Length: 492
Image (cartoon, rainbow, N blue to C red; front, side, top):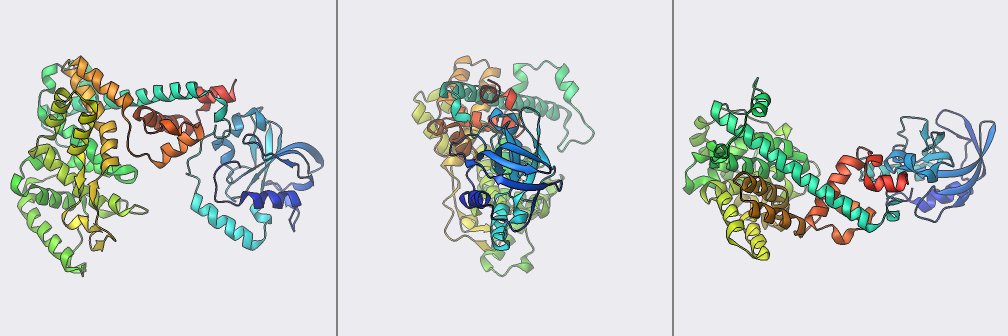
């Protein structure tokens, strides 16, 4: 169980060692268990929790190791099924009562019976532990190599993580290029999204695109708009934010007058998203006034829109911090659209790379172009009629600006400079991506870097992105034997 947990591990170990059970223990398939010797506690980081235990299971007495996990699924999630250290395990103990199988399988292929310990604990202790387990959930960040990653040389880990960071970057560039090609074809056939009964894949695959096909500024603006909106949605609302940016394309916003752009763009986004409540249900006069203005602005715009509408049930609000509510994110999006269409955001980004030679000044400029200060109604509210405790200073702060630079601006510029054969600028973008240091981390990268013992590198973007790629494409999928780190600890 040697992972960070809210479960009182020392108490569980003590209960096991002192055999504090009032009933006869049974495996998950009903076979009786007698603890002859609970074994000696393993104080090392790696390996089962107890060594040299003697346990009678049914009519047979076994001598070997005992592993205690919170969830039955932890056996695989923590890589025990790949780790030779667990081949002597004779009993697998779980705390949570949620297993789908009565046994686990060792690296050598042997079946090990499972005992669900919670059934045999005193009721107060059982209630306490199960309450803590409900807070953890099985979707916690788990890496199969968490107990043995330290055995891999740092150089090998960093080399592999860097390769993954570059691979992740290339995949984004490829995706952005594919979307640009799709946007070109969509413009030519004048079809609005969402596309129904239109598959352009073959048309795109069979076509050789010329540099001149990419000269229309609208496709670059649309791409940047889509990607920024998806990023503003974070993990819970990114899909619907992307759908919204497809449904309400950049040309719709181009028709909004510059002098009242933000207010009218907000009204369009809120009405089409389905988030505007009825005025009659509001008690707050400030909110009522704001919504009346939304209605007035939407009346001037809605005749220009013939696309799909969304509804509130499609949006996620649960367990979001106030500044991450989709309402606040849409307010930020309206202001970035203003910069994109009325303040030449994309061309200013391109010009910054071409004209600013000092990397520090360049990054500072990019951040300035993307950071959005809080203002107006949404600086004081996180939802309609819901005030924040303290004003939201930034709709998009430094951390989110850095994420946008790394995940969107850099790869878009790589594609842009490659298409227009500006090789040196393309090389500069990639070099900057490799050297760039972000100001903030996130929970996933914090956890992965701690397991791999490379916390000093986690803010370097190439490693930051590499750790995300590692976790999502190897750890979650338990592709340990395809991972260079996994090969070293589970195969060597």
